[in-house]
Image (cartoon, rainbow, N blue to C red; front, side):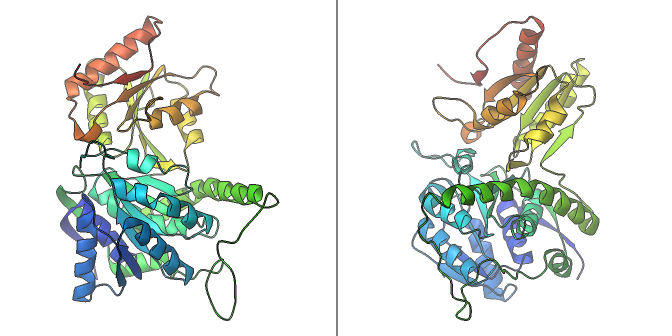
Length: 394
């Protein structure tokens, strides 16, 4: 079977990614804007295109509990959720990572209530940043499909063995259709291989207990092992990305991707669908004589601190775009980027733009004016609050 080129939404691309990964168990609970993922997977199962067990549960909490149970008997497992659903899963996300289960989940980023909104906001996924889940951010539908497949490759590697979330913007990516190259099933099968866990498997022939009590004699070492696994994932992501590029003819890059940074003085950092606009801004600013470049953060966990330092150490200014906010602090991505820049004695000044919440539009002209203003401050050695809300109506 040859690869196909289909018109898919981001949600459908996620479903195709799970199908090509030959998942065996799919606990499902609908929530906008991810519902179409599980609808398409249900269609695949009903048509016989995918041999998998669909588990219709009563809540997102139960969906993750079912995913944990499925992984515990050695089944490759997939689920999806958004917003409040991710919040409801919260305690079980810790359990999945603590049990070192390589579950893959699609998180369709949506603002968390109140107020109720179905627009994109990375806050639902970033609120889970301490749960020890890998977090990939996809810019478009093609990246959604490719990232789902690669997430299984990374998560199931014995150097990692942590669950992974593939995150993409609600509505903007989840619902809009675009051409997507769908690889052949046999090619994906060879890339992933058979899931054959040895570290954890409920088997009457090899009795074990799960979720046992541990005191101060073990907890520190256990957390250290999780941290080591997360750090190991960096090399595994690079390796799997290079292998994917060789076998499928396209590469998503590593943890971060740079754009026109060689001689840049100003860098713009973003995640998800906003990266498309950022690259357009860079080209427009180059035409005005400003040496701009862009950094796309594709993987938020593990956080790519060394990669960011390497790309940004020569810049004067680093503008970090956040489609989220940690109330009382600022943008979550910015806080991590600024921390990564701190060891660089002559590193760039960082400025944080909180923008695009729930999909609010920021025009290219507005965006360019913000960056030009911040760059002028650097040139004039003025010092303003680094956290700036964009487009707020007083």
